[in-house]
Length: 139
Image (cartoon, rainbow, N blue to C red):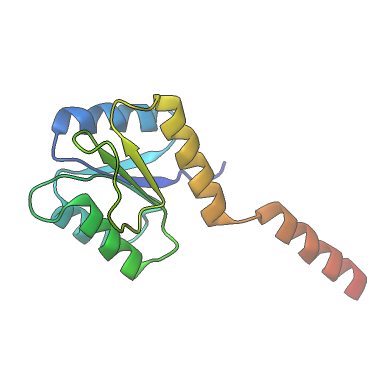
């Protein structure tokens, strides 16, 4: 059985956070929740996070600054920025994806998460096949 991928889910709205957590856990992800950017950054530094899913507008460290900090520590970690107040985000952001809340289907979010995690992991099967071929030809 393959290990579950861990998603750090951040939102100052606890209701939105719990809905997202249930949706992700029912799809087989391990979900760590935080209600502030500062707490989320400390949790991220502990390690073991495969993807960050954060709200944009939060008191203290907002979602964009959280993603900047995460990408400074681990540039390959995928990050999704969500906002219920901002429909288009045209400022510089290091987020891999920006989604306005209520403007996408949950299936779209799940598919984007899946694709970002596959891209992070890379073409595993191709690499394993090449390694086996090299080992066979060397023997």
